[in-house]
Image 1 (tube, rainbow, N blue to C red):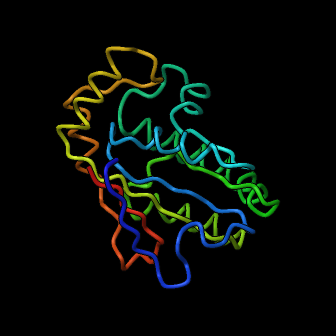
Image 2 (image 1 turned 60 degrees about the horizontal axis):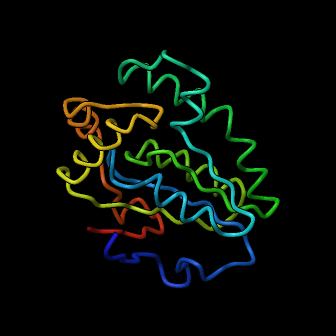
Image 3 (image 1 turned 90 degrees about the vertical axis):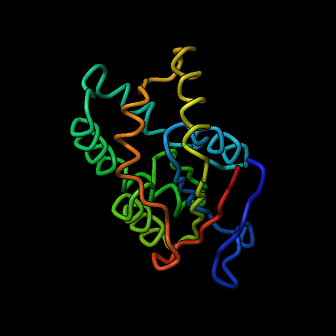
Length: 178
């Protein structure tokens, strides 16, 4: 990540309220660097990361074969985690959601969490060009350590659903551009 741009409402700047827990959300295409950023955010004290890829791979091994399988499984996972995440936030733990907040609907779930817990949030939008994402995806696939592998065609398919966050959604967006 070479640059970051903060687009938060006045008084809601990131890192300005460290006495309260923060919910961190991530938006970006496959291979953009969401999990890498999640790992960096997780280095803060009292911070817990929930990785959608890891949890889905453990809960549904070999069962997620297409976007429909993914959507069904992800909805179940979010439903199961909601109350736990809210409780952690209320207890003062920062929570990093290594979940793709890539559509208004997926971001709505994050809003439900931070509003229920009454804590601030940050939506990190990792704006990485498609070719860089694809190169990273190919390298990740070659290493074989990631729970899910996606082809270029699958990348293109998932990108059709990607909608970048807009100011009208009212999130505290931190844009990371390469």
